[in-house]
Image (cartoon, rainbow, N blue to C red; front, side, top):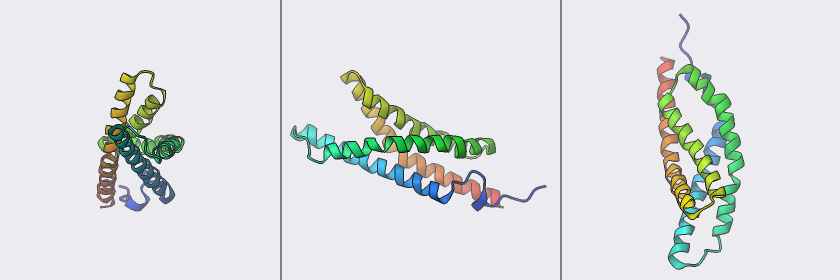
Length: 152
């Protein structure tokens, strides 16, 4: 029988720089998304566009290529290995669903043709954006539990 895996060196664990990139990019995207949402609320309420709203939208949208690259990396490395290990499948799938949904709804927002579709994409993006920190926290906690369980 083989020795238990060390939680710190388990194969699905993200390298430190990748973990920093994940937290930094997702946090920045979440925070700028909240700023954009607040700006849109102010714009609807006062019928004037806040001076900072355009910059916030540009910053939020500019994160997309980096987030897409991160998602691709996670699919090829972390998710693939986790799938083979059968580790945290439920929390991992929910995290993947939210992340992919945010990317797709962002594309829908960018290319929405009608006001009806734009409203649908907007609310989907907002709901998924609010679910992002929750799904990431749940997945992180599940990973910690799994890592502790395999270390015993």
